[in-house]
Length: 349
Image (cartoon, rainbow, N blue to C red):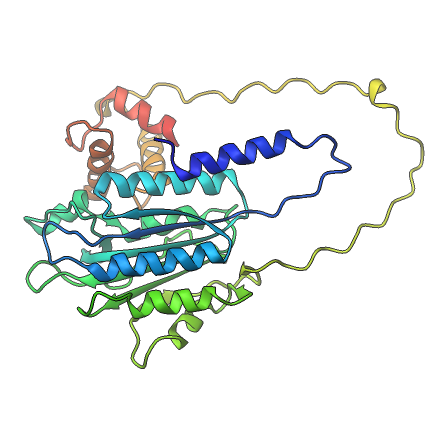
């Protein structure tokens, strides 16, 4: 099935082919992209109908504000991973695009890292969250790149029932976050099936004609009832708009030319660019060099499975990331890479 992002990118390609001359074409505004995940029908914990209502409220407001929205309700582990991969690809294909990510569901903290749980999660022991959950920082990672535009990530989370896992601590910001990324984590108390206060605040904020990115978390807090649910947040500092269009730049003054440019037929043709080389095969772990191991960690981090140090040492965090990746490709989760798996992994990034 074609995803919303595949359709969007195909439409952009068709639009580009319709441009006949550079002198008469107008520069199209960067699109606004959004990802909304609302998880309610959990197998391991009470249902969260508030997340379904919240996802619907936020989706409607995002569409009204001009965002192309991909929605995932009751997402399994694989569906969440696929949605994040599609979202990252859409952002990389549209540098500078404004983006919003909203996720509602159960969250849990394990070894000072927050995880968002898909509806398929089953935690028989605390460490199961490494393969059953999605690292909170990985959800914000696609919007943290150097070419990313203004972005807001809001994780609207509920704690598991007592005895099933510690509550999230609000750790959602990637280490490589840019000044164009704002993140916030809300911790909601159990309540009615209506949209959460954080979702209602986000919808109200997006209804404004213009939403400056700088200070957006503080404005979210100000829209919540007294003692609101925002657990933590990281403000962006860039002076850009999340919603609204910046004023057009002044027209450039024509520059006098010292001599007439030669006609197009007299210009030398540019040499064809060779395609970038593919990554060479990677050996089994026993034969990997330190550089090979770093390449594996870099690839895991780029795909959102790993947020630890790039040191070439395969410790517990790297092994857990490998197991998550193996789970996503449908192979045995050994935590150890064969040469074929390692080569496939590094060529994915």
